[in-house]
Image 1 (cartoon, rainbow, N blue to C red):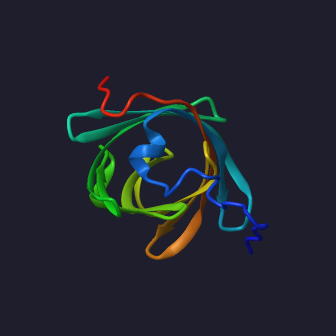
Image 2 (image 1 turned 90 degrees about the vertical axis):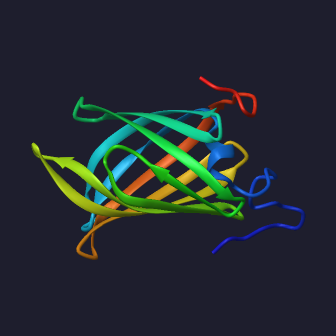
Image 3 (image 1 turned 135 degrees about the vertical axis):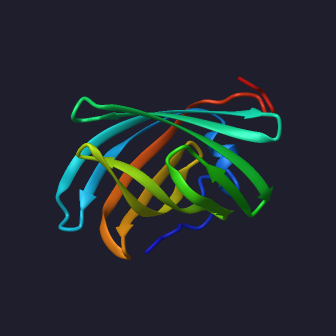
Length: 168
């Protein structure tokens, strides 16, 4: 339940949440992976850097896990219109679709997840919600054969922005 007091803007006064707008520049995320029984199985932090390269947006992610492991990922995002986008990364399987709107972003995709020296194809339903002008809460359900294996829960905070259209 959301309670808004008179005059409050539940989006933090920053307007509709759009993937490329929020992730342009630098951000830091921290959170956990929680299994289907509610047990925290992994702690993680993520450094994110987003920039425009022509008409395509690149989001570079560096994941540091509580186990000491490090993983990098680069997303290439193409805006379709103000309400939707497509994305791709090396370990995604098939199309990644996303929608922007109000105070939320949703992405759905299949991902080739490294696990115990092998790879497991899982589906993600990734939802991000604005909790202030520079903060987003991300809850991603991870499923296999339609069964929820757990959730990635992240708090993401903008740390720096780049001018619109800057290239890296």
